[in-house]
Length: 415
Image: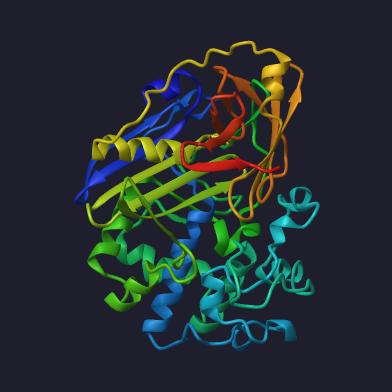
């Protein structure tokens, strides 16, 4: 972590714990650059979509209390529910299989993200848009679905989303450094969020947390997230049956507020978060009772890669120490070898073209902004923002056989 910080690739806090005890709980870099305030284990970060696991837990608590059922149609709770949403169930919102379009994908969202909005105003942004697909037929990540879950929590509980979360989860667990953020809220250990523009660090564009609501408005610390993780083992909040449902892959690798996966041959539940100026990741390995949390106040930080490497250290698996990047110069003919489109998954393609003495890439199925890839060797290319690492494998005749993306995904050329 110190090496990543030295090379300008990390600022934030991390925690690694085994059996409920922190092995590492530390801050690196600066929580506030302008005042030169260092990050520490107590620094409070916006956690973006990691909020969804708390929203999902609130729904399960209400189910255990008999206030709702996951099989209920959402129109039972959502005011002015359009006819197209009639078949959609609460469970389908939890699993991102409802087909409701994501309001954060609407053109111009960035221009309005700093304007406070009520939950009803958020719903108005996508209420009249057609469904993306038949409810329950496939997975497509949707912040809009988790906004609707917040409204369902309010209608079923009779409390605001923030009050119910506090009374049912945060206060019982003693999570005193976790809560729903507000633009005017004073947090004594708040981290400021930053973004890079080329080599220049800048304050990230402002976003009002009300725009993220139950899909991404929480702040927290690494220490509070350890307490949260332990509560999930102890079953303090809901029944064992509800917890098993939460961590079961229902539709592909998706549980309730968690992605269900494996790493190094070990079961893993994880989720990342991204909100203007902040990125985060949490990964729990239930069979080994290991937790890794990475919270950063720099957009573009490779939190997934950092989480993977910290887990590798815990489990004695292979990882690469951070090193200073040394950019090499390649001939245009060598760069042209990699130009083309690569199929990463059924939904994601990587497109590469030559831009002078660099490659320029674009990923479909995610951020459509293109990025410059600098060569570290003839077959290894990297980008800091967004964090992309490409390693090409070549056939004996020099043609590209495949490309490994961020050490995890393999893409093949499309012809």
